[in-house]
Length: 360
Image (cartoon, rainbow, N blue to C red; front, side, top):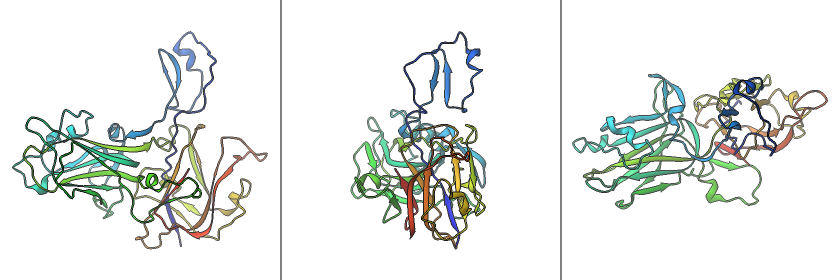
């Protein structure tokens, strides 16, 4: 049986490398150009040279337009409004970061058209969804509505139709201008891998891979207006723009299409052929298995979390497999001039039951 895996590696950090209190001064900008560094990791401005920061707890909608992806029908598109069933001309006002502007569906349209879909431009590890409704004057919050999310996996491979899952529905008429939603997974879709010490189930359940958000009004209301949709995500993904930064991805003979693990497309997967799990894996012998893949981030980072995703089991032959090891290196080399890895996780010979695996 093959294992199909996308490595949604949310490698989250605050800063690249570490900084000291020492100062080195150059006379002009041209002098900095003689230095070499990973692309995008250093910023040069009038104040000098600064390390690039990577954020935690971001609103993934704020920079959705900075990301693009291929679609089946429209080619490459940027993140933003995916579709608005009513009043599409003003749909952007629901994601412009300004709570004083809003998207108001046309009251003459059927309620079935009171739908707004947002594309984040890439999958993110979402912790919370926030809907801010307009109120005052002739505007008011939606009273009855539902919220759905999709991770970007297509329902039909040849179409731009995605598998949406409901994460919220009003049970009583809503009067709030701010609605906060935890897009938690049901059952055992997410498994935490590093033991149970200090495990906060409520916190962990907030994580969900999300690329599309759909807001559906379930009844009309005069003046109903949506001011902002926000998606609070765990942080920036260090795998984004990996090759531009000088990073790389290599793999063993039994791993096919390894690049599909880090391409930001939930419809593509690496395929790992099966062989018996080895419990004696070390930095020195891991390559003997031919079932390895190695990710070079192109720079040294403080990493908070790693998130692995497996193909859904509804596909024939797809499986998360039975056992794997995760190792990491800060860039040190062995006597054989190979990365000097240390084990982060050694998962033994047992079937993994979830769609996603989260490491801390």
